[in-house]
Length: 415
Image 1 (cartoon, rainbow, N blue to C red):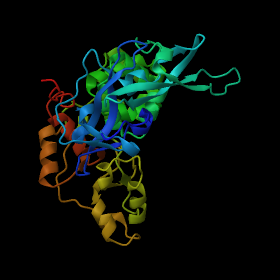
Image 2: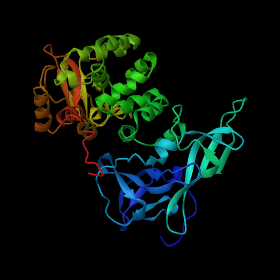
Image 3: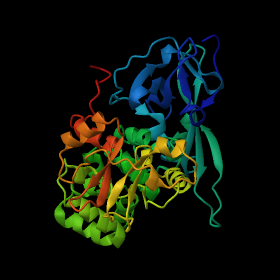
Image 4: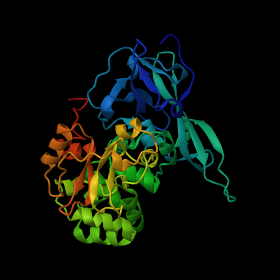
């Protein structure tokens, strides 16, 4: 680096792209690794945590960073793709210090909402400033903010069990659920639970669906039961059923009773099927239309942003009733077919009936074979009475075909 840099506040660079010397993006900055010594000595910045393709988090030594100008991080070359594992003497500035309760001045108390890093004359980086916000005033106004030197703040060298997560979550606001889930896996159980308690129900439901089973259970159990039931209602029924199946039967039943009856009914039905069958994999809420619906109506339904890409790949045409289990299943209309014909065309004129669709007791391998044989990303599940009972998507199949614990199987950084 040609000259010492001014102060860089971490909230401005977290989430920014990391580039190689040729200007090609190689990942995103997710955290800053520091070595904390005492309340008086500024922590030394050791390196960066960078998220690369496949949501793997790797370590980038600060000595390999050539520029932090304008929020862009440029490295000296190829990243080491071994998974980052934090050593005992290391601290993650974003995940562990944001929202820390601290004391400053004349015994005044506040919460950390940002930190700055600065490069000294020897080209070493240190944490310099701590941005602290005092508690709300008696009239509900936001408390006063202060930017203080590290040495003027106490409480940063020991963990606070009452630590919140408001400002940490602000740095994660634009992360996809899968990326946020990956970040939570790297946290300590206590910090993970603090973060989860401050997530909204819908956001938490999306994140839980991306987490390993053991962590799903851990986080659901720290919620009060009323809120746990609310979160389960926000989850896809098949994911909610998978999670409930990991709990003791008595607790699972109690949560089902606390859920809205319609939501609980779908989940109960899924729990009757074996896990590695079409019935155990399916969602009961695909896009279902009657044969007299137009392509314009079908396109409007698949545009729903709450619908995943796989479920939006086709519509399922049935006789009434149009909620699973439906009336007689007539066939499917693929998304591409919806784009080829005039919007006024009826979906009943375009149905595909050439495939023998799986029954609820079809095995995982049989479902995977059908998806592969016909180049599909989703398929209907039909019972013996030719009623549509749900749809299986390729992502649910992959979750069960990949080795157990595949989300966590990464090579350690210090192997």
